[in-house]
Image (cartoon, rainbow, N blue to C red; front, top):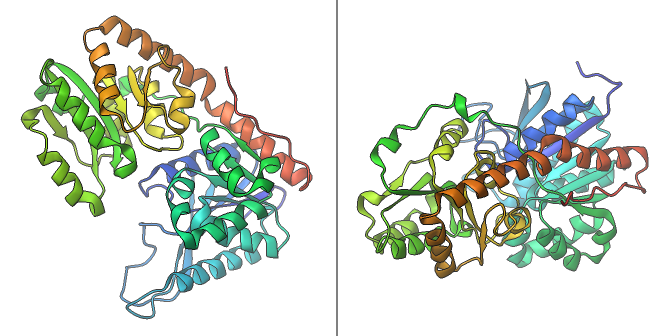
Length: 406
């Protein structure tokens, strides 16, 4: 039974743990923080890989509700009535199920993560029911999907219609404000946060018994925007002069497998290259303290959790000056920054750190101090509370949640 005295928040998302993905992790973190501050939090999951019923050939639309960490989680499934499901039919089903949830719980505020799909459906329902709505831009929604002509109209409408829009980098906010000038006065940019991690409790990964020399690593679900081909090219240049091992902690996404197999054939790494395959978050974190250098060569990347995790581990970081990576890392102080898509600059930065263990240690310590101070959960929570309390107190006047800059 829900508590009628608490403000009821409905967060909509494409994923939520145990689904794997950065958006799901962020939603889980934020939902837990808000629950701890007295909000009744509901999470409506649009595209969960966790099926509430067996994935039969045909089915009716519906949702299944569970409780995780005192959060009401509603995993919605669209109907399947034929071999081909149109996008409009899928979104119509999702909208109707979200409408049923609102009729049952009477939410005080909606909060959508990702403009495409979740943002459009959520904003439409919120506006029809005179409920304030927040939309949170994560990265790919404005870096990738905006280039589809059919998405431009919905994205513009969501930005215009949202009561408040948040961004995880200033780059994303600037692009949104160009698309929707009206959003300038009702939006803010602030970074993700990360809960402190006790790396000493994590076991040493066995693969490190097979590595020698300088260990350069990166983590994630590797796809085009991650810039891994530039890391491969940079490390190929280094192998001519330095004994290195390149460790890819994760794997390439299935739909790009053929491309990455082609790229890997270009470089003769042999045993110098290790690809772990997808791991649990704990297994991935366990690798970080043993890296000599953490590379994050993304072309675009919002505010990646991988960066914050590497900073928490005290890694010496070489990252691309893209989105929040370039905002968080201070070049020469808490890491080294290079231009995106430049294997030359990446190779130069990696080579510069290769024979400087003391500098790597200093950069890693500065990164750890930075993440503990400026990207702590209480910093992010205060930003969210500023937005939430402003909207719930007076829908037309919101206290601006400013990005904390040191």
